[in-house]
Amino acid sequence: MNGLHDDVAQQIQEQLLELRREFVEGLPPRLKEIGDLWGDYAPDGDRKSGKELLSAIHKIAGTATIFGVTDLGQLARNLQIALEDIFDDIEVETNEKFIAENIDRLISYDVRT
Image (cartoon, rainbow, N blue to C red; front, side, top):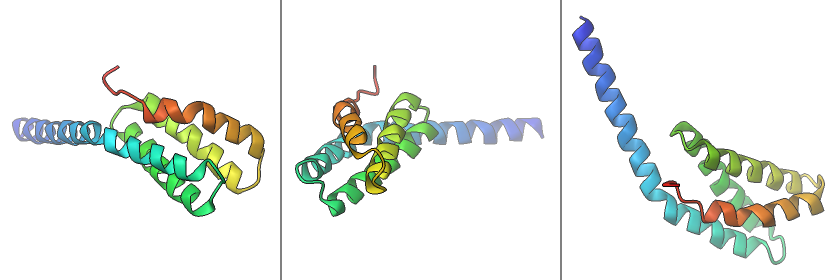
């Protein structure tokens, strides 16, 4: 019985590693999309672009953490919180400055480092 449990555990581990690999390989276009959305949002604070940007960052924040890319996940989460605060009119100037200073760190993130 223990051998079967070990086999199942190994299969799950292999599937998780494959999912992590797919996530990492898919990061460059997702991060480029975030950069493009930031470019659409930043000039005038267009709310629709901002919501799309927030959604894309939220997805990175959650998924990166699940797959063990915690520094990327934390950076995305902090950007997500700052954007949410802007939409709630909380410390808008401070949050806009934070986002502007950190968005490049997110979109240029290299998971291999």
